[in-house]
Image (cartoon, rainbow, N blue to C red; front, side, top):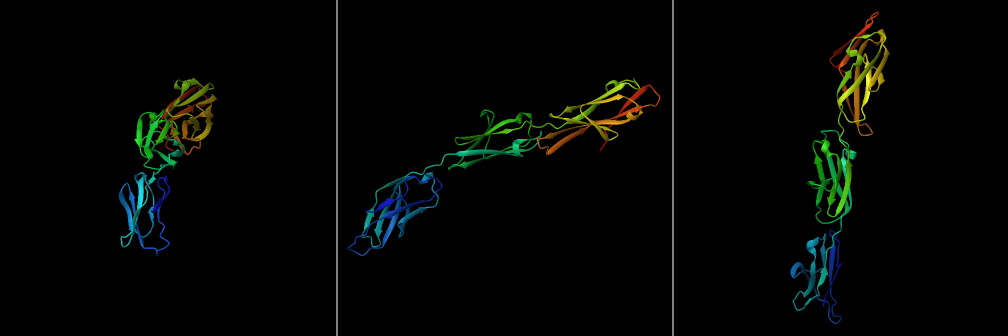
Length: 285
């Protein structure tokens, strides 16, 4: 009687080889044999002279009860093996990883963000689900999640679930670019006596912190900070003043946003105790 041999628990995706072994009679010349292979009573291989059945990559559907038959070419000999139970084993999902493009998930409002999920090991059809926060509402399926126009509500922790595996990655609060810088003349909104201290203040309507303020006098950098103290004004303070507000995306500053305030004209008339102020359109630089 032939004997069917092979691994009883192959791993999904691995090759499988089953061997149908028979011992010929030592008293007779060995006949030419044909081999047939069955799974759950259905022919899956042969007739063939080779005593081996090779499956290049097994799946769960290859599990079952296998047996083999040996026939002589003339048909005088026909013997069957006992059944061999083969159970294809799946590899559990391990090493779920998640990454973002741009790196770190640092984006500005309106940007395009792509999150990708992968596993180190795991077999079978893999199912991907995406969630934000504590595994909240389903955001998508598949190995990638795309956010085409990132908004304020898109910040937080994102989770990718693959089978029983889970991985989380933070997405930074979207950076709001600075916009609409303005100068508050303070006392310059009214006439002041020459020699009085003058203070200019710069503010922006929107913009994620930290925001850097730079002051320009006649297009030359003179100071930084939200407040510019001119001290006792004199003729040398005459000219145009603007503030430039900037903020950046990420610690490395690979994207910098800026906005320029309208131009403020300051004129100190020699020998006059009065200072006049005017606002002009933004200077284009």
